[in-house]
Image 1 (tube, rainbow, N blue to C red):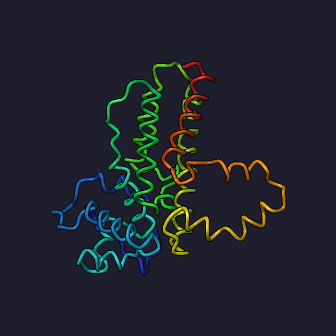
Image 2: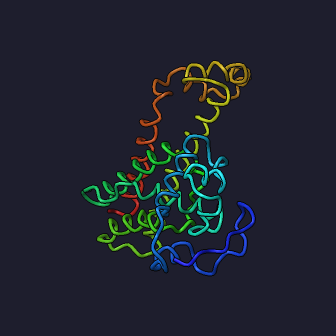
Image 3: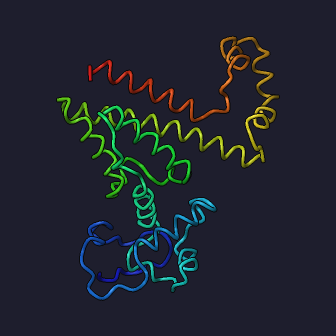
Length: 248
């Protein structure tokens, strides 16, 4: 693979006309070294998992890989493309080929696995967007479209259904990731400590008498610390709505 011009810093500069994925798909012009896109992505993901996305820099990556500071620029032009490579690596771990009976089982399986993926790699909430367009990320809508194909839905409806489910997953996971960050910042280890930490504000707000329905929830709810139940119950509501609305 032809070497890319190394930029002067971590920010992408003078990006090549070819996309990262088109360049990586092209045959190498010379024998590959032990440094590969897979090794680069794996090392960068490990840094992000341990310390967050902001800790990932091209220099830090080179140190983790034990290579020269400019070595990774053979494959990525800077941090933007590195993040693309990382997101694709993580999406590549999704079990998309798991057997499923019908569109609903397929979509439910995808949603549950996407949640698990994002909770295992919380930085993905920031790094991966619907417009990232990486090979493994595109495999997710591909699998969803294929599962819906037999129901005679038009292309726009098919995309709307996929985006509805994907949007639910993203919103739910973003909330879980934010809660985990709040607990980490305040050294709260569980739900009880979190509620204790938020108690002064909550006590005042409930004392105003303006939120009787929410106060009933606080008093009666028994699954406050069961995010998996909340996620899957909400997911079933979304899928039920799709099934009813389109008669599929």
